[in-house]
Figure 1: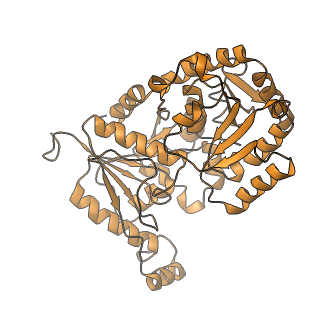
Figure 2: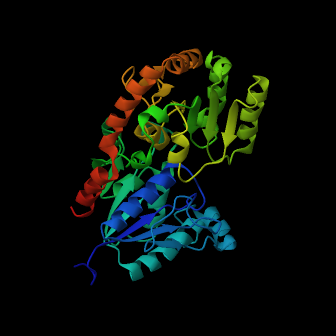
Length: 379
């Protein structure tokens, strides 16, 4: 027993973009919280999001969602930045940090999971952590370190361990911190039990892409590639599901659809919590993202038995797609169109690669991944 409880208390923290957000990090956070709760852990998910609401990906009943007030003393924050920046005791970051620590003193968690480097800064800025902590790196580490501000570079060493999503990321992170590195992929849920038989699964001429609609996800490039295919003239359609917070890019994609005469054939749709039902209406998965930490949308398409096409140089995508085995890795936009056409023209090929994709992604089933988290929590 710990702190009078039958099971340990896990505090998971993501400062911003948690409530109402439909991205991969938010999905991974909800999945991990739900799996740990199912095992009997007392799970609390904390955020200081600037707006009220619930998580887009639902938490199981019994999980506490703690929303810390996003308010802060602006006058003190202004004076703090004149005097020394974020480390000053009256910066808004320090004000948030003290608020969180007061809560942690009451909660007395046994383990903390910080969703990112800025989240760990919130947790460590004004006081040491009350227990062991794991820092998650949800993106390719090269991208994280390239964009990292100088004031964040020492944060990694404040974690007891750092989670990366692929073995290939571990060496990069090891050069940046003395913390222990653990390789734990995201867990991938599937709706395979409720899927119709394979014979009826591959009846729709649909190419699907589930990802936030933003420049790094490259929906506009996918639309241009689709416009170059023969498939567009043979009844095939393209549907992109994703949250569109970047209105300028969303409009650019709509303009690209119109420019290429794809109205009625290419669509941008809102994100949905249960993407499985949409994937069962598709035959091909497209994933033209520039880079991913893991690529949950890609993994979910593979789990649903879809052959997939991505870009050869996209880290986190080329880790999951095995060229010519479960999908194709394209060198450029024209090559992307070529592989889409190859899949569209051959149903048996789609079935063959789709079966391999499904088998490959089975290694990331929740019951296999959550055990690795338990090892870290109970180490």
